[in-house]
Image (cartoon, rainbow, N blue to C red; front, side, top):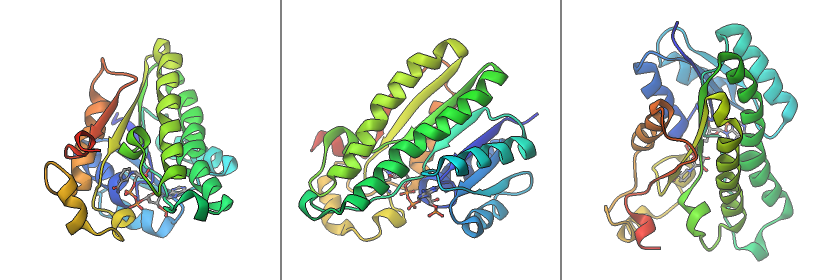
Length: 237
Ligand code: NDP
């Protein structure tokens, strides 16, 4: 039986690239996002055997329903990838409380909720692996991204703690911390200026992050790790 992987935020960008790579490797995928139409379009491009689901990770009932539907239709979940994320970049003094809350709810609470439900499924299978997508901004900080950075830094503590908590159940928890990656999230940035700050001289492709995610999912003796995928950006900032 092919292993089942649930990818939250799998409809676009980095999550979609992970879905494409895992589909090529023969996994059965649940592609999950708020927009069912976009998730379904992605699934249609992956070939047969994969399913799309709608879920807002910031809402516990949505997450519970999504896991029930995935398990009913695909079976227990071996792998979980948390790529659902939002940014509301602004200086702290200009950041509305609702924008702080939405970043914390989606990026941090959302991942905590999906991990909680996935761990239940993985315990039944006596093993599994989780990869949470953080950010280099969660490790280094960035002006204009304090709330986003807080949500991503929170994920580091959460992922490392959960890695310790579930290791005895043969469940591994790791993170990937990307730098600037070409997706809709970064479409508003001035790449020509910013790429001068990156040692490798360019933004990354979502496929390059996907390689790191799949490496962590499949590598059996790595847990509690944060793998930076940033073209060397962290060396400069
Ligand atoms: P995109 O905006 O391209 O894709 C975001 C994905 O998350 C979409 O599938 C979106 O679908 C989904 N999503 C957003 N909010 C929710 C929600 N509340 N519930 C469920 N799904 C949701 O972003 P990227 O691919 O660029 O980002 C993926 C992850 O990588 C994010 O966590 C981001 O913070 C992180 N990251 C990205 C970097 C970059 O440079 N691009 C750098 C560092 C980290 P829908 O809108 O339909 O819900």
